[in-house]
Amino acid sequence: MIRPRSSRAGWTLVEMCLAGLLVTVVMGKAAFVMQSALGLASEETASMHYEDQARTVIDRIALAVMGSDRGTLLPQIEEVHSDKIRYTFSLGMEDGVVVWSAPEEIFLDDTRRAVEWRENPGLAEERQVVWSNLVAPLLQGETVNGVDDNGNGLIDEDGLSFVLDGERVIIRLTLRRPEVNGRTVDQTVERIVTCRN
Amino acid sequence: MSTPHAHRRGRAGFTFVELAVTMVILLVALLIFSSTLSSVAEQRAINRESALAQEAARNMLESLRSENFAEVFARYNSDPADDPGGPGTAPGSRFAVANLDEAPDSPDGFEGEVVFPIVVDPVAGLQLREDQVDRALGLPRDLSGDCVVDDQDHSTDYFVLPVRITVRWKGRTGTREYQLSTQLCQWRKLA
Image 1 (cartoon, rainbow over the protein chains, first blue to last red):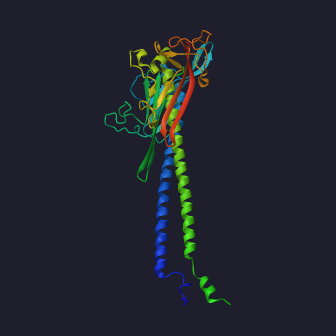
Image 2: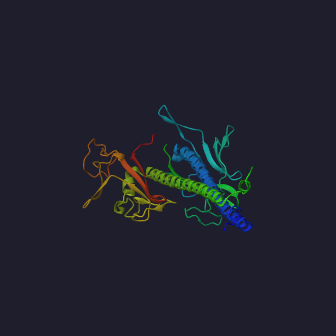
Image 3: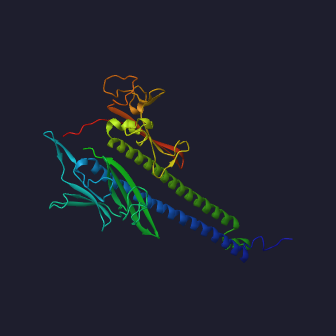
């Protein structure tokens, strides 16, 4: 006997509901997975971006310090961190004498949370350029408590810190992305340089 | 004239097979998308590891450069007995690299190593030699400035010091290595 409707009738309401539910569940899961993956990818992209920026800035600082004379660096105190460094660098030789540049300074502007470079600081012809903003108030892992929280030997160091250690200058920088969805992204880079002049 | 069958098919919507094919296509697309994201994330991690290794090697090179040139070999070789400040007082040849995991074959848990062209003599100990063959370090070459490449120890009279900084770590794709080879030399600051 032939069942006249069943072979041509398509789905019943129950089948439709089940199929709809199944599709909704699968699509919902897929959307959730995609959203999570995109969130992670976006977080990683931000992290990479800030790391790149931090490396670019620390390269500029390192090159500036590298061209300087260790004896002209200020402050001169060793093993203590500072959020600024003042230096002069060699412009070359003239009549057998090294010609030094005008004094320059790289420092952390606390109010703008920025790394700034300044030429002729404090003089009438002073020039100032912001090299990077979004500097963290403190180096990654550090809190203001009088203790070395991040184990680098320094206490309560700023987001930009210089340490003079013999002939070496150790530069550390942490950039922090402003909070997005309750999460921040910190990127820290460290560079050691030796003055060449 | 339309048959009842044709009339019905025109309004029937998706069949089960069509729906299943659609879902398979969607799932395959999702799979491709997620595997692409995963590959990108992995490549980023690999690049980051490389950047960390390069940075550590460069930092170590700067540390070597900041030392008293005549003491660099003694302070950064693997023999603690010849440390200028007394045995075991110098940094030595091995160093840690932050944010990288040591390679499974690391003898001491460190990732970095400073390597010089040496020969271990059973009697005399570690010798800095200029007759080693190492193209990356530019050897053999005269290290002492006497215009002769000999088989003597030049650990106390070198004026050029070939050095290789190796960072070896356990990365996402297995054990990886970064090498930086250069030559340090004595220079004098002009007055």
